[in-house]
Length: 534
Picture 1 (cartoon, helix red, strand yellow):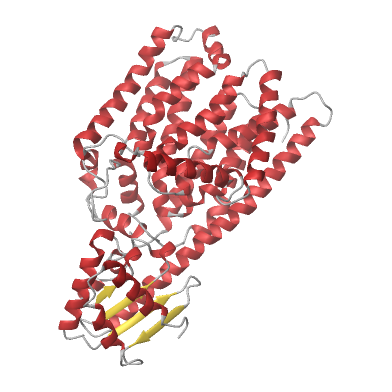
Picture 2 (picture 1 turned 120 degrees about the vertical axis):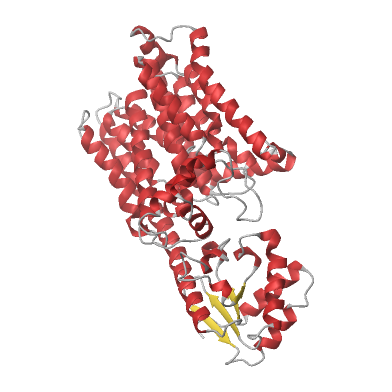
């Protein structure tokens, strides 16, 4: 691409980088939370949307009431279920489309706000969509809960930045509307006011362009007025959360243990984004960051349009604001840094833009060679991450099909002990045994028990499992047991009471266990006794 280039080629490059690596996932089956999320939301009537503004979108299907008001992601699952809730295709297509749209927003921000050269702005978008840390948000159907709010968040910021430069009430109104949607997509977007303020404080060179063009924003007082609607929306949203759930931002988790976990997770997330592996070399991670930062500092000194504040905003500040909500997440998930990872893509693009503008004769060639190397490395790492998600989906689909088959041929009231790798089926039962994933509710025909991690409701698992075991032992199917184990390679291990007559007696010993951990261990030992492929 030439220095000027053609915008449509840049758009095509970003879209191709976002779509092509994920095409193999389009038919990938549901895994983990997908079963509960899709079953609940796809079953809601079309007019249910307003209700999600004042209730938890997940209700209590996990055995507790999540403090999550997310009407827009909820509605998206209704939309993708129109083709048929049991089909994963539309769900994946929307995830990929959102990912591509986010890549285009990163590209637009780099081009219109930072004024990078076209190919460097396109590189920012391409790197963003190719980061292997994004795989969870795209390949996993439920991962949409982070890519979707990121879309509205970045779009809101972009409209605000363009309004600061060009003026016009429509851009400002669009930014506010997009922020409203972002808030009601995920609570992590409450950082928007901080993002806008940091942008205005740290980007004076960009703001000066707006002053010279007669922007309506000329004084600090008028800036305060401009922030007021964002502040009001944020406070109103937090007040709603307080009224509904008794907490504003899960502040009960802001303790010494929570903060210690946050710093450990922040380090792992940084490694995950930069080198593609949370357990990767920290030396390599810091070396990569040092090279990029050095080039960005050079860009700040060499360019009249960029200051160190600009680099601070699109680098460390954006990262910090994006990763800050992890402090109250309480667990590790790559999708939690989907939005924050934009900072790394922007920093790399800024660094190579600085090299490309250098007067050294071979600078442009060096910059483009480095860009190709970065793209190739991240594309390679992403392909491995995508294959891993496809493997998890294949195991889940095989497990769902086999469970349905066993339930249909088992005597009424029989017992099925099911074991599936948690990475494929964590939280999946009993949803995976019910419509739309099964032709009928299998739990009304047979009793299904599993290790604790596969059950939807950890706190209820012990009582639910004991009740199922005791009801089986008293019922007409007390002589029928199938132990079903699916390996991580999708191989099936199966043992039935017709093959092993002692199985019913072994299963009855489970009914007398009074300790949850011991029961979980006993079920796992029973599953381990089944050889894969038998």
